[in-house]
Figure 1 (cartoon, rainbow, N blue to C red):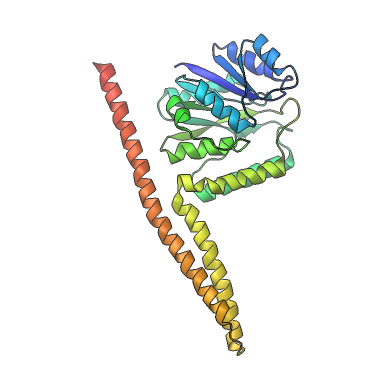
Figure 2 (figure 1 turned 90 degrees about the vertical axis):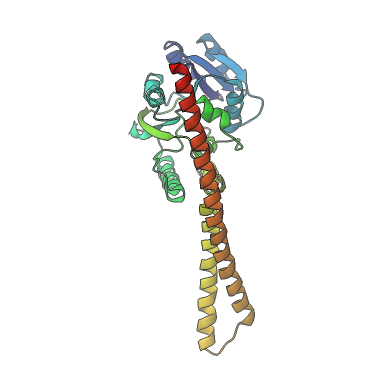
Length: 305
């Protein structure tokens, strides 16, 4: 397989040399997408053997999307340039793809992280966001925010990335499962990063949580509408209880009763629309999977001839 390692960077001079060198020594092509660093990140990366492209926009998500347009390798490995991930563990991510059992492999940081790699707030936030993802999507992934992952050409060329910032890992994960690709996790080591982090735990954590919910419309329209419908139904029940209690006290709320009815009817309709949308979406995903299976079968037969 032809493999390209993509490293989005911004002021990572403390660790970028070690990261690039680790992959170059193993014979991999390394592409650094630099977000106009003000230190020696680009110079060090070039010295160690990487190709460097200056990012045309801003944000990690935009850098990754730009890399997806440039790269044309069989497999793309995505890794942060802060030294928190080990280049020597890349084979762990590539192995499932080589064996043909996964299209997108994510490194699970929680399997082995050293002291200081996470602050308490970051660790708590990661756990909450991952739990929210599992609850909302029903997919058993433990580290959707990992920055170390490998994916086939079909995955990264079909990924429609729109989020410019740190939401990119979440978006990549959802794009993979929404389009019927196989995703799995492997345990990796996670070290304390070199240099200062650009991540704002509260601000970026809120954005990621919002993204998880927003992207439900791509993965499962039904679940997206279920949440909205449930909110309307709960609001209707709360108002309804109040109207009934007041009615027993001989106080009538005609307008509130009408509002209660509208809330409940709207909620039920949203749930019904969700069921219809989910049926259509699931059929589309299964159709894509079947087309992919047929394509692979034809390619195997061609190689056999």
